[in-house]
Length: 301
Image (cartoon, rainbow, N blue to C red; front, top):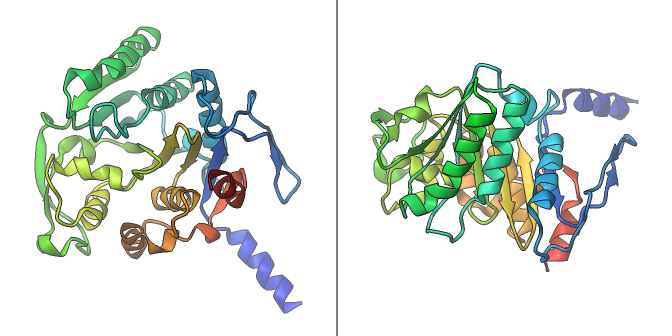
């Protein structure tokens, strides 16, 4: 009887992050409470070339499933919020956030009248070649949602602040914890980090610190993350076609590491993020909704 009471009490608190895990082959599932989860409209193998409609279906399902008890993306953003979308473009056309993912998030929020101002940010290593597809998205949305503001900000040119990290500094070679960060990071209401599967949504913060070679990239990423932890995080890749989403960035990244066959608790910067109190890095302790983690890992082998 004592064990039963303990289990019930633990379940009522239920602090485990909920992370949506949707591979392109997802055909539906049933949760432990019997709740049915719909499958994708057109499931496809992980290595298949998928259409924009298939990617959007994966994203929609992932953000519907990824979030806390109080909801996911739709409840993370308020109607009057200034929302920053941090995309990831390390090299022109290579290992970058798919522009369709950013476009989906912007439209998803705009259609629900969530957010008033949307700013897509990144350091542009290739100038207009990077921004051209994003600019096309912004122009379309501006015409469709005239009451909302859509903009692009190249972090190379953004006004910056010189600020110390609050609390424990993770980068030992920056003992004072002073960083030059863009004002947009401190002044916005919400941050959504969207990154490729191999990059990670926490490491995506490195370019908030400027274009430079980092001596301690993982530690510095966690320091920069502390200025405004992501309010929502999305990992996505094509071939393998996987989308992972949730309100807790380190938890999303931990599931992403596990999907790639990496022991999530061994990832140094995720352990540091846990030490700072930003989430969990143990994929086995995270509630993945949608596909089973082991099923996705086995398919990738």
